[in-house]
Image (cartoon, rainbow, N blue to C red; front, top):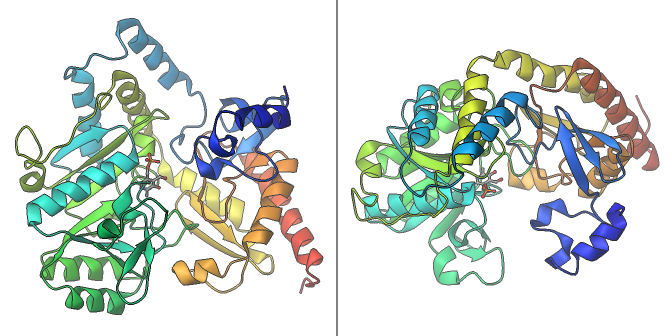
Length: 422
Ligand SMILES: Cc1ncc(COP(=O)(O)O)c(C=O)c1O
């Protein structure tokens, strides 16, 4: 069956034919069937160079042999024990080797669960209920982080079905804006438990922090007894073996992880200061649980992935993005944001540095770009407001082909709109 037929069938089972909304694009998404290295293949056997990589976890590319072998060995033993296992300790050791300030941690099944639990423990520890979240930051699909800006300091739910009583405790601030942060803290003195933010935004394209933004955030939160939570579900182990904390030399009280640490299987983790994490049950009384948390397959896939990453030279991966984007950045009417191996192309010319400037980019042009590349056999995440990822499996040939195809697509889009090349 081709993708169109499969989509018509899928619509009979799943709302919109998909199991997560960002996988949909009009008129129907291409159904993929397998992946090896940097390539994925659709149900008609067409090959695509993949820059979505399962929305980020597959930093080693698809179907890595070493990870596969370890998972096969694990399956011969058991894929669910429901008891503590030595495997969990092995993964935790590797994670803490990269991120030493994760004094204690807990594994969950997704990044969403990790941020949900980290917010609970932060509230319990501080005995305060409000949290600060950055506009355009994404922390999963649970109620307290699905909030958008309302009038004044009021946040409103960004989806029907979320009680306003929940989002009224979520205060929104602009990224890269210290004055607004100070204002909101002063208005809510002594009632803010934590500020949660992606140190580098990765769910609105890629947006990097201004020079000392993160250092200032750290200083202000500390001064006001507000816990700082870095959501590193995307950035953890992405651009170095560890956390972006070491890049910016700014350290959070609590951190969430996901994606890469599960090697492509479902996972999340949260952790940090041991005085806070000791509040979690059974050591403390803050409840957190999950039937599948720490399941052997995710843990073993993650452990092998991190063991491989420990031996890798990340500068090769990060330089490859430079290789891919340097020619493209000369094109008209676009802005490219990148951080290590994450990058996004925005259809606009001004710098993109926060939610408001990202929203000014032309999502219609981006969609044309996405479709033109799809035709050429290049698969990007299907939204302007996602991040493109590179893996260690991408070759120079992949990058050269992609760079040429992207330039051609941008020129076509520019010409469509009557703009001339300088
Ligand atoms: C920064 C960030 N936090 C949390 C999440 C939620 O993770 P998950 O999709 O595993 O629930 C995501 C997902 O993309 C994310 O990018």
